[in-house]
Amino acid sequence: MKSETNRLEKTKNNRTLCPMFDLKTYMTERADWINQALDRTLPPPMEHPTGLHEAMRYSLFIGGKRIRPILCMAAAEAVGGTAEAALPIGAALECLHTYSLIHDDLPAMDDDDLRRGQPTLHKVYGEANAILAGDSLLTLAFEILAQQPQGAQLSLELAQAAGSRGLAGGQFEDLAEERQAQNREHLMRIHANKTGKLIRAACRMGGISANATATQLEALGRYGEAIGLAFQIADDILNVTSTQEVLGKSVGSDARREKITYVACIGIEAAQAEARELVKQAITALNALPGDTEPLQALAHYVVDRLM
Image (cartoon, rainbow, N blue to C red; front, top):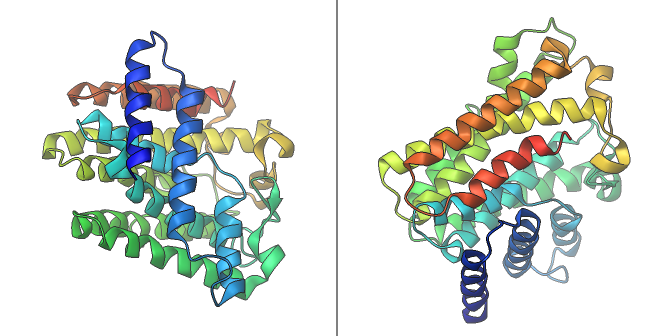
């Protein structure tokens, strides 16, 4: 932990001397810290039941940019806290996010064969084991949070984002709206719950780790809501415009399933414009924060830069 603290301090000092913020290096570095934290936290693959622990690790370590934990750490720093204090919280967020992806990919839900360019977990380990691996990662997320100084507040934040009024509810409505008439009001609610609530929670949980004020948490929440919706709009667009090799998962699947999407509702150009406007709103929300908001600003732009 001491060497990790030193690395954090060196990075912080180097960044203040650098006139241009290097988002790519920042994200790579933070993703590496998260991967190391996850490796330390998860049961080792040789621990019984070995197959279950192997399956949990398979889905966590086949890739991913670690956007939610990176946002969590950046939010902590934006209110005067440290990335180090937010690091285990970021690991919990990634466990819960990965659980949701495992379950989303199941035949009973989105029935996807690829995730991050690799076969989905149920294709490798079977459906029953995929369900159990997802359940185990969900449980582990709250085990991690229970060990943090603000464990009760952090657990409440994540539970509210992940349940029927958040991620799970958004997935339910997403499935229910397949082959239904495109309705923008329903679409916004689905996206806000399925994607936005967890991103909002990631930002607020970073602030909680730094003992942020209520006003600061509200600003982080507004930022997270805006980029969460922008992120999902970008995903809708990329499902139409990208390739399987670039995206790491099936493209064109939304249209095949007749899913309700921003592209289907308002078209690609209008969807792009809406995503850009949401990024502006997110960055405006950061004006209320006292710390270094440059990483959060860059991460907001990254959401729509993926479309270029």
